[in-house]
Image (cartoon, rainbow, N blue to C red; front, side):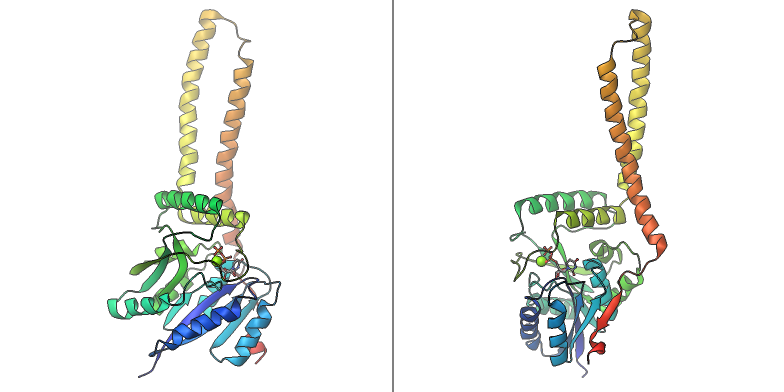
Length: 314
Ligand code: UDP
Ligand code: MG
């Protein structure tokens, strides 16, 4: 019987000290799975260290190791998309190279797909140990908000780490939008997903590649990509303030007619002006954000550009 193939997609940016430990850990696990072969697709997302050299070295040694190297940093989302596109396996998984996604879970994932009939088995971390207090706080808030307003199901603590059947991978590849938020796309395409929980692991080497600015942009990507509720909030605020001003106009006219004194009230006028200008700019900003995303989509720029693959060196 022909062995089934599992493809492992690994986005990497400045991860020179993680490539080999990752490969060794994965290889050890995969060797215990007798009826499957595996291949790794490392995606070098514009690293400025020796990440690419390590990938070249491995690809020269092992036939099942492939790599794609981008012409610059395009972001983890682009790297995942490129890897999924290149992967040939019957099953495909996406893993971080820092070993925060434990390879041993692949065994359980594969069994759940084969024996329980799921299309996808995804990992969900029940703790966020290893991340800073502020990051834990904001991530917690973000997941609460997006779970409420998103048009698709968003699971708190969900990682990009999951094993998917080929059909699901093809469905994801069919979505060619430029502003990608994979956690939403995985939900959007549907399919039966089993969640397995695990304690978050510490990073193997190096530091996180997601600073506050990047995480904030990622959060906005998720919200704008999968919810139009912010636009509704802007419209609701507009209606609310129309109603308040209607009452205010009546009160002010009545007050002036009864007591006169049209000049008093300058400080309150300024406060109201500031407040309302703030609300207006906020709402314009929300609309602007949706417009900006639409603008970027209409340009149809490529999601990533590959500069080198293992075929160039072998
Ligand atoms: N990564 C990437 N491009 C980026 C940022 C991150 O390919 O622009 C990769 C990174 O090398 C790692 C994975 O995405 O393999 C997750 O990044 P990281 O571990 O820094 O994120 P965290 O675990 O802190 O959320
Ligand atoms: Mg990590």
